[in-house]
Length: 380
Ligand SMILES: [Zn+2]
Image (cartoon, rainbow, N blue to C red; front, side):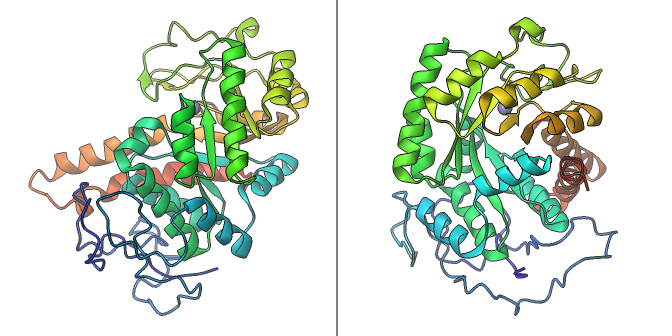
């Protein structure tokens, strides 16, 4: 495994400051291989060791951007992240499809974690690295607009290359073909067209169009379809949203999933099986319908994705994985602990203005949650 450092935020990249809008502190030295927990030094890697770069990646190649603010494109590969990603996959690691198929046959699940900024990403990545488990980073339309559609692709690519680590990028809940295309063109490994609220036929037609476009770019890009509405929010909820039905007759049906997968050609499917986007504040989320998951997995013929993982009980997760879930989405609970970390740090030291200090606990909180989830999903 490659063990080296990514100089994000170190200020070493003097040439590329044109569209830095996030206020990240240029003097922070970030160690993406290490635990954020300062108290746990048992398997920390050497922060000072910068000489063990073995992957040959060029530290000066940081400008894979195609936006017009950056005229100094230094990439020595290609501007198409998809091709960059593919070359890396072929050279270094399994494809996302292979990793998901393995999870499917081994009855484990890949953790899919949503992030809104690079600090959350750090918490997720460090946890995954320490456990050596593959991960998918999800960015919704809002999340990727906030970080930058191309910028997050470049960031994930840099982590994947530098650490030779199976980290993949998914365009989570995308509501139009145009935005699916945009993510594919930016080099995302996977995309979700979410037509769950549309009439069946309309959902099917647009999903199919997304699949055709993805496959025309690369057979390695995975397309996920959504069948069955489970709400839209990644919030802490007082109650189940009115428009989300979790009774058996409203869950995804075996006949429709079979038809949907066959006609669209999707690689992955996200059904409604009693799951719910968002997390109930005062209780566990409702139980999943494990029997339905089993039926749907058999009928769909493709790996299945469980959305709305936050708030689901550990027991339900294990049963769902055994029944045929291969990817699990976690977002709300990461957001909640991240915010709490920042809030507490700012309350404890109201004078602190260095983000790399007051964000530290927030990053660590994310890492802890992701670690727990990855251990559960991978049955380790
Ligand atoms: Zn979701």
